[in-house]
Length: 322
Image (cartoon, rainbow, N blue to C red; front, side):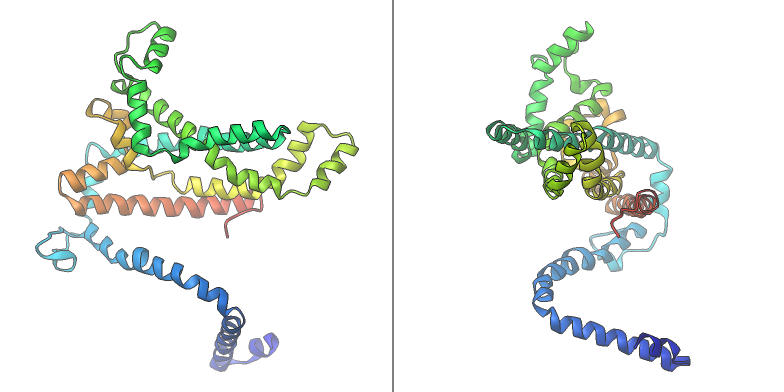
């Protein structure tokens, strides 16, 4: 069939290929109709809540007014983008967003992998379950509660403030009033809150490795570190690569909720990020067009990062998302 389609000359060949493709799709739909039916709610969700609202991106190129609506607001082109990049805060928020995400990639990303490997080596199941429960619990605590606890810990009487004062010999009143400590506090709290939950996917990947490989390696005299390096890590490498690509794709994204709950004007120099800047400009200063422009810029950069990380990963390791 493929040879016949390819050998058909001119427009007829194109029509034949298109007809063959539709025939193949129709057959696949008939054979797997129950599976496609299960996908319908998800497809509808993405169309209604993700694709349909994308027309609102046009306000990034308009002087949006609630009186005239999205379609009736006057077109201003790239004015909002020029206002952002020409402003005094553009470099600050981009720098802070990239730095915090870089520290997340450097510290928060690898620690769940290490925890999963260590948990997998535990033979005492009771102790293993206790450790898993303790590390999982912070994930289920609300960010508002987490931030409230952090504020108490770094207050003048908080144990973290007192510990830092004891180590440094300084007399800090509140660590959240010191701009040099914000990134450390933010990243450390992310490690505490997410290390256990994030390790689940790596534990699942480790359990999928054939145990006969370990037995064969043990017979050949390979110790634990050799088994870890030559069996465990290669076995979970596709999972690590996938999670790494997704993490790189969020290098320009940082949730505003936790930042807003922890920062204050005194430490904007190191704490203000793109999402918090968009929040202040869009909701507090009532400038949705400016916020939409910054958000669109952020999304485009993230998209480029995902494609770039995926391409590099495919070239270097042979593993990729697609």
